[in-house]
Image 1 (tube, rainbow, N blue to C red):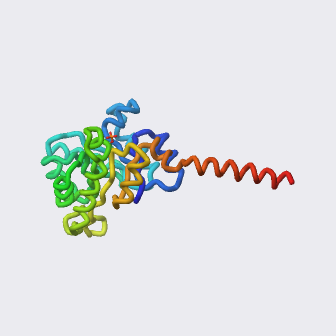
Image 2: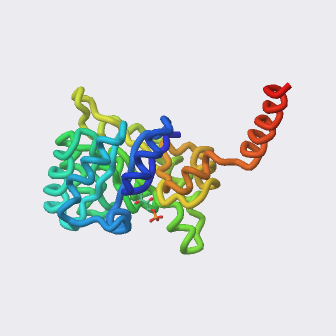
Length: 231
Ligand code: E4P
């Protein structure tokens, strides 16, 4: 499973990228609002994230009609070669995804909650689909169970003929991004059930590295090494 960081905060992205294990970034309108982002700065902000990231960067189209999503998607894709256009899993979003995918613009279909939504996203040419785990938990449903259904259903079929047109003229199959991740346990479970990617908030990503036995073990090794160096 690959790790994306789910944030629009440049400092967090720079820090996470410096660890050498980051494969991409996802943003959304709420994450951009959270850092106090202004509309006029949005294009340059996305370009800066793309420079910091050696991998795909999802930037969300906010229009609801297919024509608006397509126009925004083209504008976002022109910002940097590693932009992925985030599109909601709606009828208008599916139609826009088909058009963008046929133009070679990769789409991440977001706000996906069900197997039929994910299958339709794949058939419409989405490069990624993002089932939201935590938001299912928020309404007392089991988000990880729903994610497992989506991963399992997609693995039953070959979507290579319907995917986004790649630079080599071949179509690319869909990958599942476990999104709305709230805990280390979500990350573990997403990996065990075979999600291709987890997009993880920075604070949870840090917790993924940390373990008390690692911290305590390191402290003990350093204490013992002091004895060696002082002997
Ligand atoms: C990622 O693509 C989503 O926008 C994000 O994971 C949503 O997470 P949330 O449910 O914690 O807002």
